[in-house]
Length: 123
Image 1: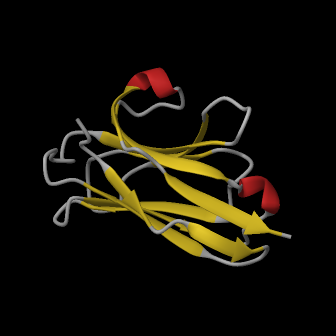
Image 2: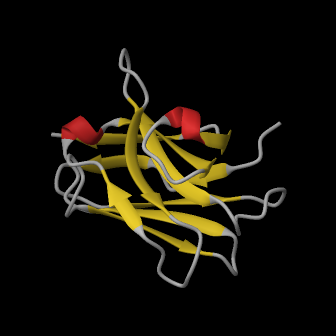
């Protein structure tokens, strides 16, 4: 039962940008912290960014590897989560997942997941 749907992935050259979106018609994001995770082939799923649910801006947290390059944001009125990715590197290549749950860095802290969108960065 897919509750979250990611979009915006694709193939981009190193240094380029992509914006991922995550939306749901079945889950209301209000009240949940939201996060982005990624998983590269042969690797464990890793934390990318998270944002709290409250307020117009929300408190954010980023993995060190993406800090200064990625920006997480949310539009509660549109029930949509975003991840703006700038300065992409080949090592950012992975399937990116959005998740809803508690404000944390571990996948176990999130209750609902999307099916993922592929991001491929060529060198």
